[in-house]
Length: 393
Ligand SMILES: Cc1cc2nc3c(=O)[nH]c(=O)nc-3n(C[C@H](O)[C@H](O)[C@H](O)COP(=O)(O)OP(=O)(O)OC[C@H]3O[C@@H](n4cnc5c(N)ncnc54)[C@H](O)[C@@H]3O)c2cc1C
Image (cartoon, rainbow, N blue to C red; front, side):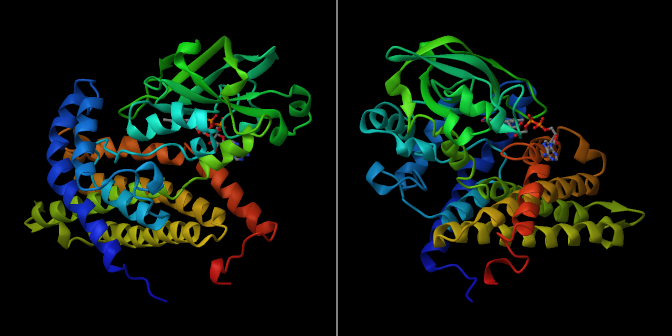
């Protein structure tokens, strides 16, 4: 078993590491100052300019197939890149990506939705959650009723990331109420591509993080039959494919943050003296550092194993849930300890620790809460779909 990186993997990882250090980290102070004024840390124009710089070196569309101008890299490489990007809280992502389910679009839809999303001309949002249906996503109530060649959508979506800037939404609506009542969501829900101009409205939801998701309102929004993404009645499967696309990517980003946070903790522990000695000499501080380092290492292998399984075509659902659960819980432990090591300074807005503290909390909620991941993990074991011996058997 060889757990080392190939030369090519190392080169790509190191390029991103250098880009983050030279181009992204210098922006951090400015981002913090803007956010303190309740402005976006980075405007879309600034994001595009920075993405353009990365693109000049070929870093565009990490997992986007080469036929669409992307790098066509696998999940393992995507995870390694995400870890590096996570080392800064600047809200940066490499350009050239589109939601995985847009690739099932027909040719016409690809031209109108997929390609402009990859090029950054259009913004999408994924809208399944509703005020009455979050973890229990099968319980959605938004309806789409056939009227001649059109469908008429009514309902409310909530907590939709990017919903305030998106110019189109991938909306999940019940198209077969009878089947839905019988619990057959696999046949009763359809995904529609709905432009904002077709009539939906959005309102930002303030959160404890630095940016807010939005609620979307659909009141008699009329869309053509051609707005259906994939097959009528098969939307729930698409929704699960979107959510399952790479659960390891969220903990990968958090892992990068944890590495940086512990490095900050180490530096502070070495330099801060109390009672005539650096706090690094105290066992209480050392234990916080040691526990964090062990958890970071464990998380690294959970994330990379899940990503590797995706590339190898192995069923990765159990590993992905484990990486997501462990990443969410432990990242919150790590940031809390690093804040503690910094004492009063950790609690101030002089340092980014309190920002990370608020941001990382989200990881335990979206794309499947801790409890839902535990439910998945336990059910897989109880039903015999997964073994405590892992994929090695
Ligand atoms: C910032 C943010 C961004 C988001 N972005 C999107 C997005 O882009 N698109 C989208 O569609 N959604 C999005 N969401 C929604 C997110 O996926 C849901 O909030 C999440 O799935 C939880 O659903 P809920 O909030 O309705 O909580 P609920 O489902 O009401 O759960 C409440 C509590 O009960 C627990 N619980 C629920 N069921 C069980 C059970 N069976 N066993 C044990 N415990 C249980 C939960 O774990 C949780 O602790 C976002 C949410 C946030 C906060």
